[in-house]
Each structure stands twice: as structure tokens, then as C-alpha cells.
Image 1: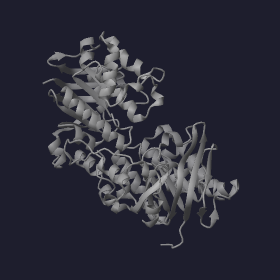
Image 2 (image 1 turned 45 degrees about the vertical axis):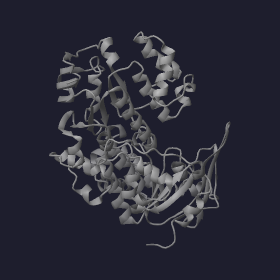
Image 3 (image 1 turned 180 degrees about the vertical axis):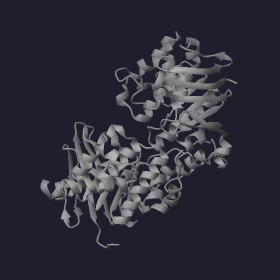
Image 4 (image 1 turned 135 degrees about the horizontal axis):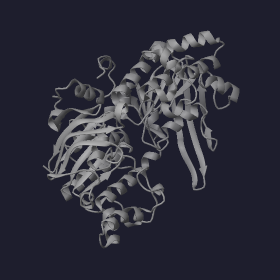
Amino acid sequence: MNDRPLLVVDDLRVTYDTPTGIVRAVDGVSFELGREKLGIVGESGSGKSQTGRAILGLTDRRGRVDAERLEFDGIDLTRAGEDTLRNIRGGRISMIMQDPKYSLNPVMTIGAQIEEAFTIHSNAGRREARTRTLEMLDAVQIRNPERVYKAYPHEVSGGMGQRVMIAMMMIPEPDIIIADEPTSALDVTVQLQVLAILDDMIARRGTGLIFISHDLSLVASFCDRVLVMYAGRVVEQCAANDLANAAHPYTRGLLDCLPRLEGGHDELPVLKRDPAWAAAVERRADSG
Amino acid sequence: MLIQVEHLSVLFGRGNHTFHAVRDVSFDVARGRSFGLVGESGSGKTTVLRALGGLMDRIAHVQGDMKLEEEVLRGKRSRAFRRRVQMVFQDPYGSLHPRHTIDAILSEPARVHRLDRIKDRVVRALEEVGLDASFRFRYPHQISGGQRQRVSVARALIIEPDIVLLDEPTSALDVSVQAEVLNLLMRLKREYHLTYVLVSHNLAVVAHMCESLAVMKEGAVVETMSVEQLRSHTSAQPYTKQLMTASLGYDRAAIDSFEEF
């Protein structure tokens, strides 16, 4: 374990100026990331994806990003120029998106896309890129790397597409991976198999992972630590295996409203939202 | 039995290009019960539901017998059938007409079935699903996903069916909204003695809603079981067991023991 955090986020804010007023998509989020699996959970609109995108400078042009501190390996990301950011993006911090159908280039072979991700961030020649790409496809447990190398994204299944995505994002050996709902489009068994591949790879290389998901039980079982977001803020943070004992009424509400395999047919408890959750909750998050 | 499905097969294409989407599926659903169809994507669960609703006959080859109270269902369904059997689809964004108001969306089925007092029915249907009359003149894009799914339920119920076919009714919703919609479906079922056939990939949702279920894979039923069997983990089939293990969350060791079926 390295004691210096890979990433420091302090008071991150993402605001959108819309005709109907200012929308605070992310409203003062602070956390540090080490070489660990950090989960960010919340419902749609809670700001979890916006947080991930802001770190990489991928916020929509209409949005404004402010932060007290947004620091990666000693580099101030809020002041970094586009050149520096371009080197970091994909090279040292990479992102896995939800649906391989939309995030892979449909008119490029899988091999060419992975090679591109590698060569852009290194001085390797074509032959080395090809060898490394095939090794990577093998590492994400694709049984016939040569065939998949030549295939186009529409020729592979969703699970395989997402493994290709992982191969592409891991090949420059990044320090941090931001995975935004990386397996939500997949069937449950395939989802777990893909996560196991990601898990093994980041454990071997000591990569830090930010895992953004709406699935509380998945995050509780997969991650080391969890941030729970509501209305652009972190309302609670805890160790992942402690999520079941969460204290905040929002987290409790999310856990309780899930139907359970062992439960009866009784009415499910419904989440009652308290406007106070969206205000003055940072203290709790900081002390957690 | 209210619904009987016997040796149902659905085939797409012809000759060498035939694709068997559903293979020899049989099950019964008694009146007032909920029957679940679970499986992964491509298992054929939605195709079974659509075949039952009469939505497959024009685009695929449907074989076997489906009966509603002993009456054989084949080809284009009668108006009487449609009055009794309604569907709720997965995606409330795609299944409501974007340029029709909620009022128009809810009035249409009532008009098709030549019902009277349409306005009253629309207001009441909205009330039933927990939306007030102010929603009548809004468009689908002006309301949330959960509200849209409530409108879909209202549209199905406005003509007072006794059977509702539900295709992943809460998969596109946040869990807190899912709980509200599941509670709504349970309440309506009790109040109107409805019979449900529910398709879902989520075992917990099916366990919550249904008394019995069929696990499907590659178009065929792997196993038909009661919800008690599902809850007590007493499945005989390794495929079902694996599906259950997977639904419990991430367990690195368990994943290595997963098999391809």
C-alpha cells in the first residue's frame, strides 16, 4: 500500500446554468482514492456519473467544474492544460463506460482500437502493439484472441464487448480506472465474470478503481469502500462490507426497498425523501 | 386453469436459417395468481409473453396450444381477448407515444373498446395509479420514469382486464421507484383480482411478486418451481442454482466455479 493518495478530490462542484435556474449536479464532493476499489452509489441524478466525468475533464461544455483541490499524483487537474489532460486521459486515468455497443468504435476492428489505445500512450511499434494487444485479449479471458482481434464490435456479445473495453482501458497500465456502470447492461453471471477479470487485473497492478453503480448489493460485495451520493452530495461513506449497517436514512431506505429472495409478498418499504438530506450533510461524510 | 400454454414453440425464419426462439414451453396459470418467467437475455422469456399476447403471429411461426379458459388462442386476437388481456412493457420511454398527452394515451384503449364516460375513466385510472388529474394534459417527456410506468399501468387497466402481461415492468427504474411500482401492482392485483404473467431477469422481483415461476434458458424451460422452492434454495437444476448464487452479489471464489450451460 502506498500512503500517498492517488487522487484527492476536495469540494468538487459541477454546475449547469439552465433556463430554469442553476443546477448543482455535483455539490461539494470530497474524497481521496488510494490503491483500492471505491464505489460511488446513488440513484439516477445523484451526481455519481458527473463526479467521474469531472475528474477526467469530460464534463459537458455547458457545465462548470470548480474544486478546492482536484489533484492526481501531484498534478492539479483544474489547472492542467489540454495537452497534460490528454496524456492523463486514457493513459494514466482511463474510463470504462456502460455499454460497449455505444462506446466502441463500430467501424474499427477490435484489434485496431486496442492497439490505438496502446500506441497513443507509448512509443511502441506496430509489431509490439499487436503482440501486446493479443496478450491483453488473452488476459481478459477471450478464448480466441486472433479471431476477436480481427472482429468488429457488432460481431461480439455484450459480455465480450465489455471485456474488450477492459483490455483497451488496461493496456496503457493506468493508475486509476473510472468504471461507470461497467456491467449494468450484462446478464448477472456474465456481469460477475467480467468483474472478476477486472478485479484480478487491478489487484495485480495496484490500480485504483472508482466504481460507479446504482446497484448497492453489487457495490457492497465488490468494493472496499463506498460513498453514497444524493442530490449531488456524499451523504454517507463507509467500508463496503459495512454498508448493510448504514446509518443515513437515505442509504437505509435504498437498502430496505429492495425486494428480497427470502422475503414474503408483503408491501415493500418506500423511500421517503427528506429535503434536509440535500443540505448540511457534509459533516457526517467527513467524520465517516 | 385460466391460462394454459402447451408445447409452445416460436420460430423465426425458414429452412436453414430457422431460429428457435422458444422451444416446447408449457405452463399453467390459475386465476388470481402471478406466474413468473425468469432467465437471462436471449432466453426467450419475452417472446413467450408476446406470443401469449398475440404479438408474435405476424412476425414468427407460433406452434403449440395456448388457451384462455379452454378457448384456443390462435392468430389475430379478438377484441374480447384484448379487453381481458393487457400488456405493460419494459421501457416507459419507448412505449408511450411522445406526441400524445397522457389523456390521449389513456383515452385511446377506452375508445377502441367503445366504453362510455371516457373522461371519468381516465381520471379514475390515473387516481388508481397514484397520479392526480393534473397529469392528464401533460406529455410523457414532462413526467418522470416512475410516473410514466404508472401511466403504462393505467393504460393497461383502464379497460378493466383480468389478466395483465408484464414485461420487465421495473427494470428501467431506480430501486426506490421500483418499490413503489411493485407495491402498486400488488395492490391492484388484490383489489381487482388480477392474474399476472411477469417476465423479469431479477429473481428477487419474481420471488416478491409471484407464487410460481419457470426458469428459462435458450428458449426452453429449465425448471418450473414454486416460490417456496426458490426461497429455500432447493432447486434441482445446476443452472438455476448458479443463477441464484450470481444474484447474491460478488463472490470471487464462487465465480470460478461458474459453468457454461
